[in-house]
Image (cartoon, rainbow, N blue to C red; front, side, top):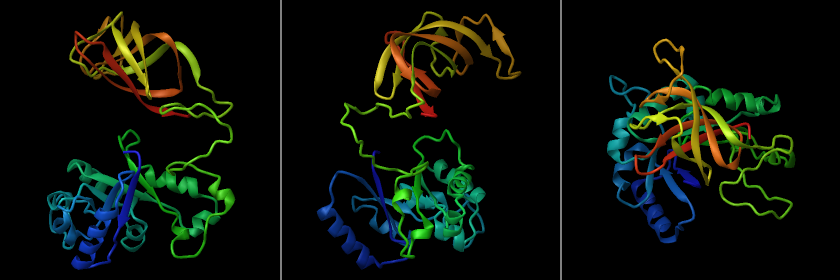
Length: 305
């Protein structure tokens, strides 16, 4: 999902109003973006068949129980919600939601296969003390950093309904988890999957990689085994040069002289790449394939680029 637009109705509208809005939207929508509409919980089931992806506006941190007025993740799923907003600034302020309760809500949604939309943002007081980055980092700290497809909605709380607007300096500065569009001064040939790096932090061109891998294929990983390494949109052929050691998952001790890694085994190995490859610092994930086809080796997280 490249672009996601979320329309939050908050506590506005009636059945007739929402129906009219949906009708007009379906008549004029384009296919350039993915659109999610966050409705009040009482209307989700009523509009689940209108061809628009629906979201809840909040969820209980509990699976079930004596929690009057709250809505569980299972209830949202049954109503037809595919997404749900959590951590919204209004909920944090008015309902005193903590980072820990937001993590519990996050887990409840993931359990029901509902996509959480995690809201973060800073108040005017935090902005003026120049602690925005630390504040956002703290809000996201309770979430699993390796969570796939994490959706973060950044809202500058200080600019909501205040008439305040960002300065040119603030617009020129971006940091996680903000999404930005950049215009490059120079005309360069850049394609999907290419990397933009700082001038003094260029990626290294190498032909051998040392990595710790959690082997996720039923066929063992053996020395001299052939793989396909994929980095962003680029693929190159590679070969396992040497398995340095396997980690005993019970004692965490290293087992030297290991010649293969079985399913779920963790170990360090050297990978030789046929064609020079440029990389940053990375975390690797699973390798898949079978006896007839080379296995695919995917690096799924890049740090410090």
